Length: 180
Image (cartoon, rainbow, N blue to C red; front, side, top):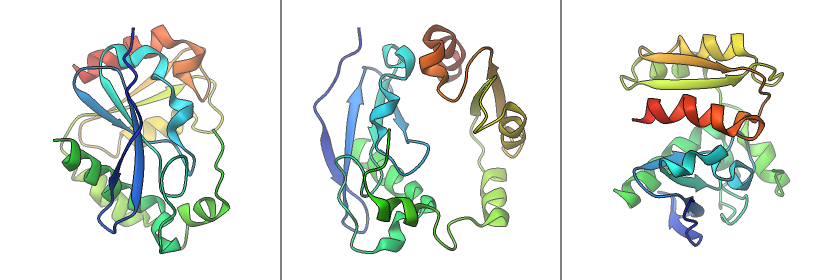
């Protein structure tokens, strides 16, 4: 059985208060939601919390996280700094229309810069797609995995966009060995 920990907070480099919840025990794994919504829908990722301590971050202006002073900091590319701040600190539906609008604001997506950054990421990366995911089709996810020097793609049979809900056992069987 997974251990649920009380919600806690930390501060991003710009001072914005960010919320996080943890579930499970063991080596930490930072988990970000797939858009401008709180991380509550991730739950225990189908039981993956039985293998790792999941750190579920609420992006700026969602869930228990504060709204930032600068709306431009909602941009999705800013989540990297927030996750990094949490990493150093540790050594659903969006309810904020401003966060939704800011997440993909002008300049947040720079394909050339993103491809260059991914090509330089030397760690192993696993991307998992549900066989029937219309939002992130397996072919697109496989193409994304190819952008990483050590990227791999697993397609979970019978799953849609939330594979940890569709078949938790199969999800954990695919992800836990990758995490070691």
